[in-house]
Amino acid sequence: MGVIYIGDRNTGKTSLVLELAHPSSQFVKVTDPLYNQLKALLYNDQEGKTMATDASQATYDRQLEIEVTLPSRPKNIYTEWIDTPGEIWRSTWKNDNPDEWRKFLKTAHSSQGVCLILSPYREIIRQGDGIIQEDFITRKQWIQRFERWVKFFRQDCRQAKHLVLCLNKADLIRGIDLKEEARKLAYHPVDAEMNWMQRNDYVFKRFFGPLQSHIAELNQYTSGLSVRCFITSIYSRELVELPWIYLGTYLSSNQ
Image 1 (cartoon, rainbow, N blue to C red):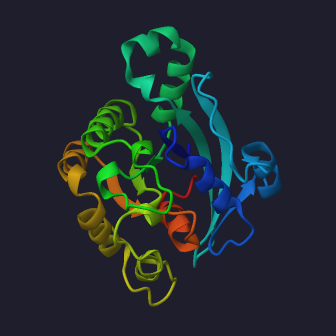
Image 2 (image 1 turned 30 degrees about the horizontal axis):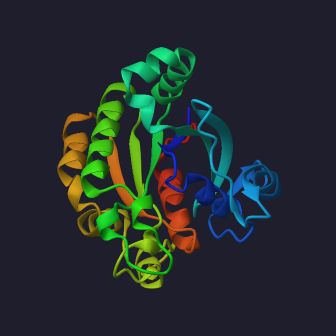
């Protein structure tokens, strides 16, 4: 049992994994596959960016082994990385792709931790810098998509004890100072500015306002599940590592 790393397509999961696997690690590193192997598989050197997931395939499933350096000892986290198309929730998709759906559910059922990657919604994206607003879904669509995830977590992730919600591409959010946020939230084994509960409260209140009732529902009605909120960006190593340090800290020792 381990962690399932999931999210709709175009949320930046691939870029986050490549940044996590980069040799410039602090407390977290991907030990398998190695960075060069992942980069050869996922990065287009000519275009200078990660390759888009081919939508012709129903789901993509890859394995990662992640090592977290904790004050007591290193912790290994075995991770199933699954790309999901938005259509996965439709009955027609499940009927047309029964094997992929069953495999997805089997992985979800056995996972003790879940790392869900979300992209920002259109209304909080800053203007300019070549950012195309239409590349992002609206606030209403963002909430509707998360409602589907809530249903999935409650019905199909009953073994999960830790649900990590990562609002990715935080560098695109209007009014945010990424360096200051990283400084404030960063993990330090000794004398950190915030503990885990304080980090969660801060991020939850500042960045997850539209989802607060849904997250409260998960916390209230899903027995034994701990939900924690993070922001991530490939331009901040501290923020990229933080969710995995949390998982390494709290997942049971048999991971």
